Amino acid sequence: MRAYVLRHYGGPEGSLLMDVPAPAPRPSDILVEVRAAGLNPVDFKFRQGKLRAILRPKLPFVLGNELAGEVIAIGSDVKRFRVGDRVFARVAKDRAGAFAEQACVSEDDAALMPRNLDFAAAAAVPLAGLTALQALRDELDVKPGQRVFISGGAGGVGTFAIQIAKWLGAHVTTTASRRGEALVRSLGCDEVIDYTTEDISKAGRRFDAGFDLIGGKTLRQMFEIMKPGTKIVSVAAIPEPQTAIRDLGGRRALAAVFWIISYGIRSRARRAGIGYRYLFMHPSGSDLAQLAELIEQGKLKVVVDKAYPFANIAEALAYVESGRAKGKVVVRTQ
Ligand SMILES: NC(=O)c1ccc[n+]([C@@H]2O[C@H](COP(=O)([O-])OP(=O)(O)OC[C@H]3O[C@@H](n4cnc5c(N)ncnc54)[C@H](OP(=O)(O)O)[C@@H]3O)[C@@H](O)[C@H]2O)c1
Image 1 (tube, rainbow, N blue to C red):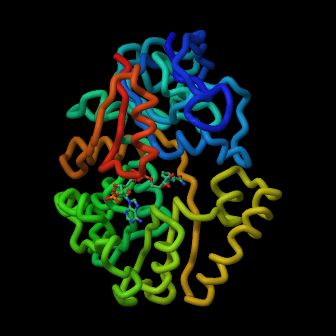
Image 2: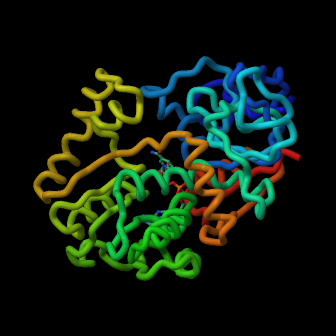
């Protein structure tokens, strides 16, 4: 089968489309004929080798973290899926393999696709949708009437986060440039701060929950606009010890490293009286089923910026790497 394979870490030249053997399902796996795969910043960060402290699979390695397609075989222990089901999934991080004509997915990580989406739109949902759901519902515990601040609302995660925060009943403020303003407003965002012309720290200390998709200076400014006693969850800044303990399987040595590298952010958070957590989202078929329900009910729209043919996956990844995507980028494998 054709697959987009990482042969060595670094620039785009280290990855290429090539023929590899099709994967063989384990007893709890479904084998999926991939119709479309979603792209995410983690794909180029992984290719660059930036995740090597956390994930070190043997190379060559088939890239790709989310997919939609049709089940063509099931392992002997699979209970919830049948051949012919249309499914979508955020695949296990240490297996990846979504940028391929076929992929194995643990049945626990997959869900039936929303009936009102095609494969390209369904492939755009899992990673970004689950990240937004797990951050806002589980980590920030957003409640009706709360004021939620989301940095970077126009991208893959942001377009889901705005809508999920609205679904949870919040008043939502996001940052976007003029290029993204109309989009974030169309998704229900109440207030938009143009990060290219306005100073976020002047927004006033009025937010009950912060979800950071940008990191750096943006995160530092967010500490100035949160009410004391509230919390910021970032998926783009620096991991902290809880990331290693709760999201990466209790890796204590890694927790010590994260303690050191996050010292500055945690000190800033402590001084401001605000909690700081860096989340690594996790695959979850049951959370995906909840997203599918919201999509079928018309409560969650999927924004696909560009869909490329599989042959042009390097171009698609370069577009994601440009950092300008509005919503999601996908490739169609067929
Ligand atoms: N830890 C995890 O589990 C996890 C999971 C998912 C994602 N992430 C991370 O979360 C981050 C966001 O992911 P994504 O998929 O949403 O990225 P994305 O789709 O590539 O985001 C692109 C969008 O960000 C906007 N943007 C760029 N700089 C901005 C700034 N300074 N302020 C506000 N908006 C800005 C751009 O708008 P303009 O072009 O208009 O500027 C563009 O629309 C990435 O770093 C990704 O690696 C982490």
